[in-house]
Length: 318
Image (cartoon, rainbow, N blue to C red):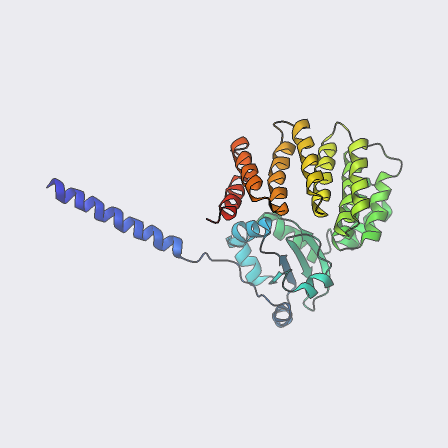
């Protein structure tokens, strides 16, 4: 009897495991999309709908988060089925389309008319409710670049200036972006909004590959905003700027300075991870593995632990 009971338990567990495996194997339902912009325009014209172009890359973690957490929701499925046409475009494959729209970050979601004329865009991740509301507002002319420009011309509001400059920045219009960022900085104290504007100007220089100007801008931020979070951000980006031009030794030195100044804080966590990334970029496998292992040991609660462990396995050829 005891053997029979044991056998029944084993069989039951086996069946349950098969059931769980089958459920895991099922494809998760996602909101509908096409992978070709021209096809999207055909569908949009036929249905008299706007288009949302989702510019992504294979390495973009926020793009994957959007696919996993937004595209699988009932609200997104309903929205992309009935209200708009979505085109998912890999910006590193269809480089011509990405260049046409001046894509500077990922993910970027460009809302267009059915004929493909831009209405406005969102760069970065948004939860499903915020995403749908933002895009729906854009369709009604709320919060678009033109609407914000009209408001900024009527009101001396530095927060409006920033919002407008940011929109120009992510459209690749550095000239107009700089004009409005400079209006924020003109005659203002070194407050949080001027700090954000200073970081944004430096970021535009970096994205436009003006490396020397970007480096100088980040170093000035460290001086101007000493004792604030902008100092830490500036220090990190000095490291990033060195790493960008393959000055790996200087990059590691900059990251070590951040770790020393911000022990136990988020800036130190980020700097330690980038030390490992820098060693990997340099081609020093042994030191990269050690650095990633140290990161996991020192920051066990970090959301980047999984990424660090994955890099170690790759470097070890596992």
